[in-house]
Length: 109
Image: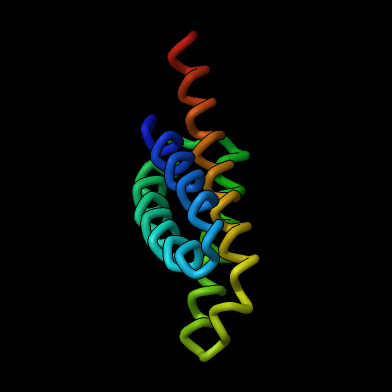
């Protein structure tokens, strides 16, 4: 769990750099989203170890991700949802930051 923030921050930084060429940035956004969903599964297995803020944001992330995935399968254009994808990426980054910070506080006590 402690490496999720570093992995996530690295992937988002690479993704933002790849948006210099928009087409490559959009393709890398798919890879970023897939990896973040896998990270969400890892976080989900450790859900009860999260603090209240982390739990709330994780639930919001899961609900929004489910809505976005279900609307895409219903035929909504992918490019319409790109701002939502980017916001979800940063929400996931915030969740991993909260987890890392709370784990850091636990180890300092």
